[in-house]
Amino acid sequence: MAYPSGTNAPQEAGADIHLQRLLAAEVEEPFYRSFIRNIKEAIHPPKLPPLEVTSKPVPVKDIWGFYGGQEKRAGATSILIHVAVIGLLFLVGTNKTVQTIVKQQIQLIAPDLAPYQPTVKKTAMGGGGGGGDRSPTPPSKGKLPKLATKQFVPPMAVVHNPDPKLVMEPTLVIQPDANIPKVNMDVLGDPLAKSGIPSNGPGSGAGIGTGSGGGVGSGSGAGFGPGHGGNMGGGAYRIGGGVSPPKLLFKVEPEYSEEARKAKFQGTVLLTVVVDEKGDPRDIRIIRPLGLGLDQKAIEAVQKWRFEPGKKEGKPVPVIAQVEVNFRLL
Image (cartoon, rainbow, N blue to C red; front, side, top):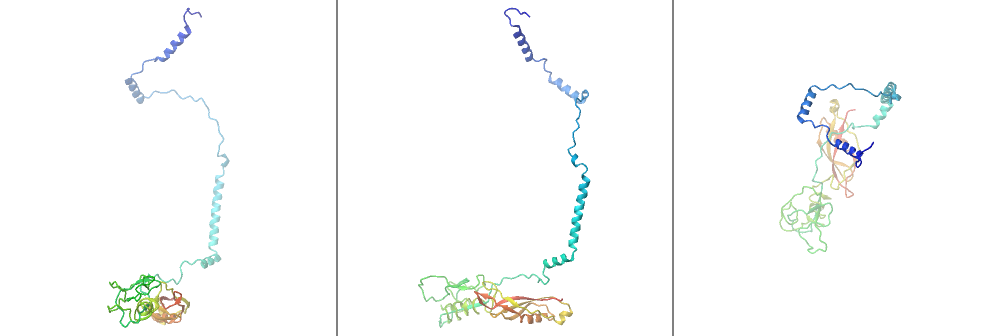
């Protein structure tokens, strides 16, 4: 094809085509027309031509085919296993030998278990103490020194060594939570005394009082009051505060009274007993009686018991203890 000289026809034709592509083929439709058309199509949607399927489904191998037909067999196997386990448990549980062994090995509650009794803390313990320096005047009134488990320096109302080489606080060997008598005084002495003249008293072995042993009072030992061995209260010790309980070595079962046997009466008698330094019971008293002659039978039985005595600092001492005597009909 020939083109006039001086022109480049293909380039101009290409530029015209490019320009036509940049121009819009038609003017954009106004918004109100498109709005009205959308409403009409929403009310009366246009009918679309039927869908033409151009592909065909391809058969695929069933992935669960391996397990096909196994459901019934699995269910039957599960039922058989459960039946076998239940049968085995029933067979073992009804076996007399197994039942006998279980009864021998397991005992949840002791048949003669006594009912629970709340324990009340005892602050006053047995024992006592006393002292003095052979003074002709009675011990003077004052407060007790600090309570402790050991004594290094005894208390003194009149100090004979005003310039000691080693200063230590005086103490009494008494349970720290004991209910001791208290007086509002700044000097040491016997809180139960009446004299106000400073004096350690006619006792001996240091301390304050009419007894001996470095304590305060009329007893012997580093405690306070009548009795001996420390602590306070007189007589026997109570368990605790460094005092170990006595241990039962020999026991005699109580006899039944005729009245209680006829009435088929059962129960427990609670007693207090003082176990002396030799392990013999004495001063037996009834705390919780039963009646029908069983209280006396309980005392007669406990009088024949023998104990290993309680100890304080490794030495046997008289100890107050509680004892339960059970009466059960066979």
